[in-house]
Length: 284
Image (cartoon, rainbow, N blue to C red; front, side):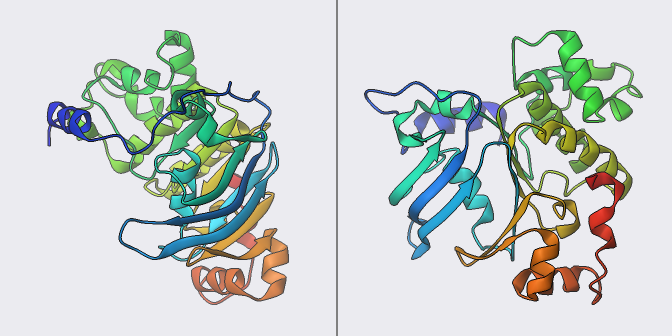
């Protein structure tokens, strides 16, 4: 489907998430995130979440882990209010997100999905999409921090290279770097990463993780990850299974519990409980 067709389809799709008639002002930049007794079911399915509670203090770095289909990505979509919950509340800075304009709500967050959207524009324009008023120097700094310039500078037109429809001229890893540059440029108080480095090779991932670790400082971060080594140094890991939080704690605490997380770690580390991956240079 072309961009024009996608845009037409979007315009013709009835809105299911509406702004409040009397919206409240968005909270300040220093904001905690709280899910209170959240219940949610996908259309045509039974409840995924029933009375889910999750508290993310301001500035905390939280890793969301667990088996596929457990509800990790859905949590990020609910926080972005891409769909509404059935019961309960989601709060940012003590304010119910349903009382905020969607534009104001999403302005508080930088979101990097596993398969980021790319536009048939230049690399520079795709990065600047996060903050259209950014200067060329700011875009360049974000591109450097996300290691976009490593491949862009080798192209004849550099950051002015057209990426093709849906970024067809870029590899999956390159698209993820562009999306990470957007997050860096956006400079939002809440950072949502959903398998944001899954398409990167090991060497690139180490470099990008270092940039991300710096970006997370002072921000509230929710990071969905399949590879546990990429989140092992988070302040807290939340293990989600079939819509339920089954464990919470640090990497070492969860290994000591010998529960769901420890089994996932053992599986990914080839049957050994060696936690050396948790001390890799990308997660200092």
